[in-house]
Image 1 (cartoon, rainbow, N blue to C red):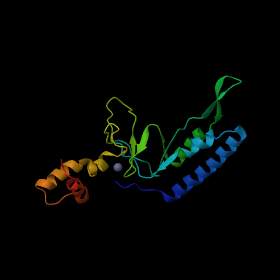
Image 2 (cartoon, rainbow, N blue to C red; image 1 turned 90 degrees about the vertical axis):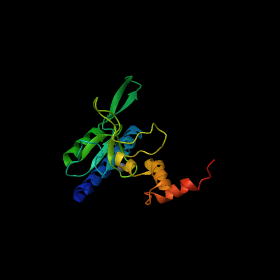
Image 3 (spheres, rainbow, N blue to C red; image 1 turned 45 degrees about the vertical axis):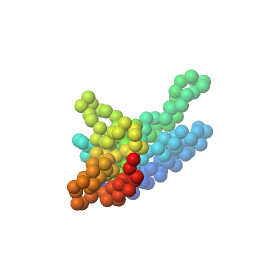
Image 4 (spheres, protein in one colour; image 1 turned 90 degrees about the horizontal axis):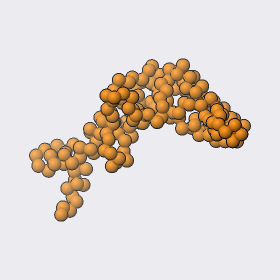
Length: 183
Ligand SMILES: [Zn+2]
């Protein structure tokens, strides 16, 4: 499933991001902080669509993931969290108007292999992960289809190669496995 990108729009989005980064730098300078810039810099743009069942990217083909809440800071005088910037919220409004899908970065993560965006936080009782979860044993984060034709099946494929199959799906992997001294 190829994702089509509106190139003109992608250029506009990139200009908006540049502008907002400048605004964030100015706000930080006035506040004597880096927090606004850090928040804007942490926003990531995704061009490979969703890997999550039930989600389709809009015409723009672009998804932005970030923390869109206003930036707050503890104020020693008022002893409260005070809003120091509404820039993330305003940016999300602009991006949404441009046709970019805005997602929360703590709920989504991109597949390490193909880049599709996957939900990592349940949004309903019947939600099941569309990514491979090996309980943290591997540092790799991949969608189910990347996992399916990747090293995850290595052992089974090698068993096949060693015994009956003529065409190994991943010859190098198998050679490596079989060349190891077995004890
Ligand atoms: Zn993938």
